Image (tube, rainbow, N blue to C red):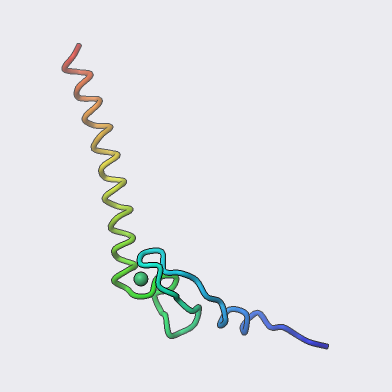
Length: 70
Ligand SMILES: [Zn+2]
């Protein structure tokens, strides 16, 4: 019987870095997977955080504008 272990499946898994689309292999050569590097991981987290902050800031601006109009 051919027995496929989940371990060998994981080490052959390929994916693209969400930040720079570089090929990342799911093994110990890429400790920051799914990102290719710690730098790409921080870039992606930073973009998410700044986008979230911008949305929150817009909401605050709208609220304060409404108060001024009344
Ligand atoms: Zn990358």
